[in-house]
Length: 257
Image (tube, helix red, strand yellow):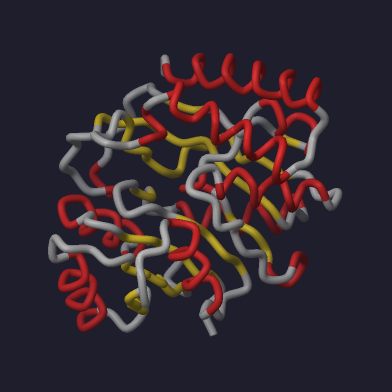
């Protein structure tokens, strides 16, 4: 059984999927599996996934039975994962070669079941590989420690850097929300009294300003954050307003990196 299960949802990502997959398979820590769930792509993504699976038996492909969104695709992968650690990478982002190795070491050293790292931002049109990425100074810095209260006013965890220990936390699925499902998962873990520990070293690369990405439109995220605070976290109206204002401010700051 592998130590790390990497979860990757895919939808019409043929242009960037190859580099994302290779960034996982090229990790210095090789004891891992890559669980890819295709959510009904029409651009040949599934053919590309199957080719990777033929070349490397650590790639475990699956087609979702019907379109269900990123949360459901991730959950289908999590449900068939066999690793002790669950990690996440979207099909248009990249891991740097030592990401898994360094984060496993860090989690063991600090004794944390939920960890994350700093990461670089790159332009959406970047065409290189994870192994070739040249540090560019655009770093989203991971704080040393984040608890539930701090997390409510800013999502400090880039999903491409997150990793949780199933032995400590059990198998945790993402709420099937259209957006902010990863944020909701981190909050649900922290609500149980588990703080997240951040590794300052940047170990992943996030593709920013992606065409058609809702996350690139900060105003479009406001109703999704509001629904998260009110419906998922069941915060009071004043506390929801406070959290939303804090999230908007921190999101604006991060967008300038």
